[in-house]
Image (tube, rainbow, N blue to C red; front, side, top):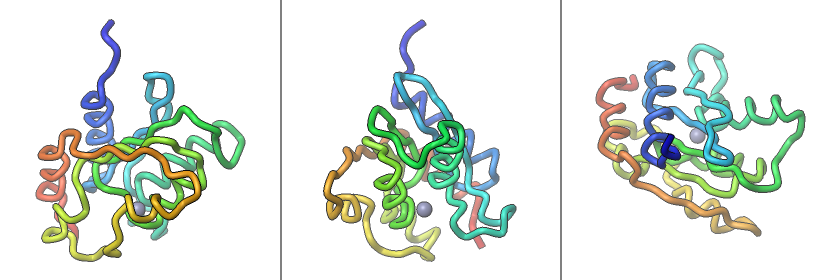
Length: 150
Ligand SMILES: [Zn+2]
C-alpha cells in the first residue's frame, strides 16, 4: 500500500470537520499514520477552547498520559490555527503544522478572529516548528461555505 500523502491526511481532517458540522477539523500524524482526529466542539461542549486543534492535542496527550511530546508529530488542520491553537501546538511539542486555508482567506466568511498569524505566534517561540499550508486549500475553504458560522 502506498504511503499516505499530505492530501490524504488533510482529507481526514476535512472529514473530522464535517463530522463536527463546522469548518474546523484536525488530525495528528506520527510515522505516517493518523493517531487522533477531532473537530471543533465549542458549541456542543460549551467550551470556547474546544477548537479542533486543541481537541486533537488533548486527545493525544490523554492517550499518551503526558503533557507534551518530544518530536515526530505533525498536526494537520483544515484552517490556519488561531493564536490559542498555535500556542497549544508549541506547548505540546508538535513539530510540524500543516494547514489548508489561511485565516486571511476566510476572513470574509468568519470575521470573528484574532488577527495574528500562526506563523507570527510560532516565530516568537524559542523552538519554532515547521509550518506548511495550502494543502487542499479550496476544499478547506469550501467548508466555510458549507457550514456558515452565525
Ligand atoms: Zn484555534
